[in-house]
Image (cartoon, rainbow, N blue to C red; front, top):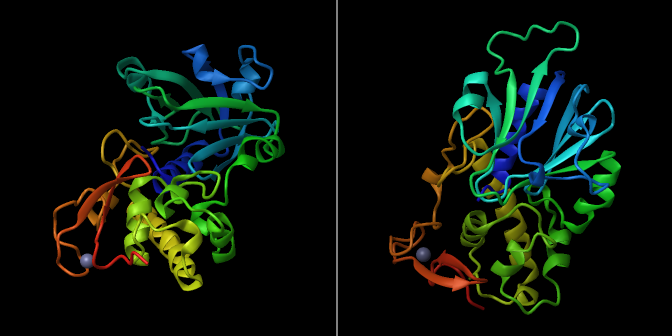
Length: 287
Ligand SMILES: [Zn+2]
């Protein structure tokens, strides 16, 4: 499932492909893939048809495409969603394309050389989706108000507030999007290993120093993964259709039974918060 680094990599690609371009045509292939603020089927302008894209914003694992009309399309990649530049040939040959947008420069309809011409949203497993909003304020006051701080810039006080008084495992807290937006199974395991904290520790019982270490580790793990253009384990590709390289640098995720990069002992795997969790019983403190 794409986590923050993968979604951020897609965002950066979409900035290059979409910003400054007019949406000449927006097409929703599957109407049940899009939820509007009025509950009915989306009108073309609600899918940004006719508007110029001015920005692509991210919070946690969600993206918002902002247009000069003020309108916003919010999207979530779910388990296997891909939002990427495409050509007419891609559109004719790719399966599971639920929506697409044809782009053109506002001043001259001819596009710059090398521009893909289209952006498409495909999602084989259909856990992703599209939502229309009247404005960015409506997104921030609505669905994004329910999310915790963005994990890429989470501060120690924000992290401390998210964990305080909770008896659940710190791994479960990190996966809770209302506590911290953007972290999933991969980067939770990686951050806890770097912070030397056992994943089953009670959230509310971490020391102040450990909370500092955890917030620092989360930001560092995500920054490094973005620099490697995200992790590709299954379906993930960026907005240019390319896989990421971050999976080659994972220290613990997916490495159960292999030697710990810290001490050389075998890494342990256990189910915590209903997710397979890999950690080192020697390097990650249990109390
Ligand atoms: Zn170790």
